[in-house]
Image 1 (cartoon, rainbow, N blue to C red):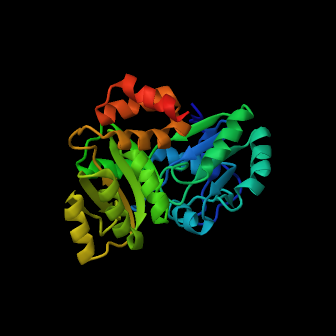
Image 2: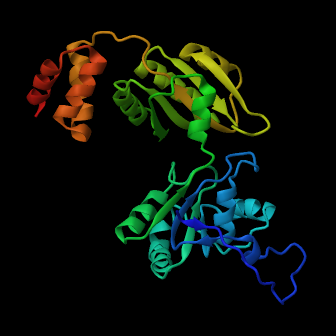
Image 3: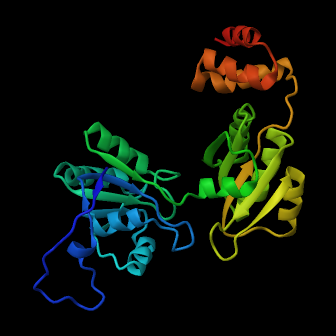
Amino acid sequence: MGIRLTQNNTKSEAPHKQGETDKEENSVALQPGLYIVATPIGNIRDITLRALDALRSADLILAEDTRNSKKILIVYDINSSLLSYHEHNAEKRLPFVLKQLRSGKSVVLISDAGTPLISDPGFKLTRAALQNNIDVFPLPGASAVLAGLVKSGLPSDRFMFAGFLPSKPAARKTILKSFKLINATLIFFETGPRVLSCLEDMRDELGDRDVALVRELTKKYEDGIYGSFSDVINNVNEAQPRGEIVLLAGPPKTKQMWNKEDVLSALKIQLPELGLKKASNEISEASGWAKRDVYQMGLSLK
């Protein structure tokens, strides 16, 4: 399963410096491959023993920001090789990383906080590894998405994570219109300066819903704001929230029959991405229109 416990029954003859990690005695044997390792999102203690094993034993650690990641490695006395890997250098770094993996090295990928590949460029590396028949091992742990969801009090049986919404209002509203069809809790990352305008656009495009704004998860000043869009917007108007924000909107409270213009608008958005059959099914469920009628309207748009 990627990590195999080993014992070293021999003592090293070379003396150790005080505080130096004995990689042979305290590490585990890692199978060659790419390890996707979750790190804390705020509280430094929110890291698994398995993650520490992988970080300590890896031939190479890829980090979104090496300055940030060094803080964790120093706390846990980890001295593995560290290399930056982020959206601005990922394309340039990829051939080197694949060469290391093909040669039988164990490579760990971490992000600045939480689980890699969630709102970061790591998925391209994972895909490249799989295409080259290199094993990929996920090591689960902290996630702001799941922490926000379980703190929100919103339905958790079905949810969708959508990352950061576009910064430009027109693009943001277009995206939100497509989300109106989804009968699930919607999860977004946001920043303090943008959160008010995002909430207002969400209210206008998604309609009345239960909302949760949670911030600084697992940190000293963790808190949350809960209620309707109007409740949360009024609260944010009084004091702009700071720090790292997870914004959640619950599923639609009631299903109201859409008018024909709404159905056609939704089809125009969903057809290119989902195709006629799947788009018709989803829009039918959300709009109250019969699948047959939605399908026929979709045909008229082709």
